[in-house]
Length: 266
Ligand SMILES: CCCCCCCC/C=C\CCCCCCCC(=O)N[C@@H](CO)[C@H](O)/C=C/CCCCCCCCCCCCC
Ligand SMILES: [Ca+2]
Ligand SMILES: [Zn+2]
Image (cartoon, rainbow, N blue to C red):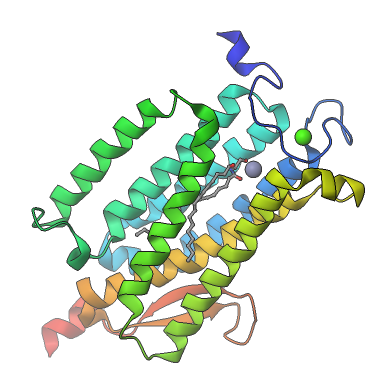
């Protein structure tokens, strides 16, 4: 049992040199960059509060769980233990399950599913089964998790086909652009390590952490905005960026111009 927690008991080892900057932290920069999750998550929790209050307070679970993803990611890179790897990967799987249950567009549900509650229960069952299967071949988990991004982009493409709103299109392309940058760093760190070692620059996995959090902030806000238009149209959702609309990499959020009260009045 203690072997599961042992330093370097995971089969995964990222490009960054082990113990180079600390004798207690295996991959120092990968550990520190995981702390970026703690910076972005509370801001997103605050920014999405008006939408969550109107739609469903369970929306807050997404960014609360992202804090745990950051915590487990930091623990994994600090120890490279098998337990760290599984906590990191399973927390990502459960955030994905939660996002699908909350936001997957109703009109893309399989035909035998009639409502969101049934769909969410099905997603929950699949997540439990996948959790158990993840112990069969743990080295495959990270690759399979990355495949979800392709399905999310495909579903987004279907949703955006008829969209002409420049603000929504900007958010969509920014999310996809950030993800492309993020996954390029992840793949390059995994498969191009000898090249990066020659350049003495082995920090791409750390950049992946920062870029993927931004991509998730952009993609989840976009999906939440599309969801708000379908599920709570009376709230007149619109998009803004914090701290300012003019910042190239501001954090997107949803402003509700109408409320339940205005719906009742008119
Ligand atoms: C209808 C669904 C809406 C989904 C919205 C987005 C949901 C985001 C869900 C999960 C968050 C992922 C957080 C990533 C944490 C990274 C930690 C990490 O670095 N782990 C590595 C080991 O240290 C591990 O190798 C990484 C594994 C792969 C993770 C794949 C995550 C998929 C993220 C999907 C993002 C979608 C972006 C779409 C852009 C248009
Ligand atoms: Ca390493
Ligand atoms: Zn990582």
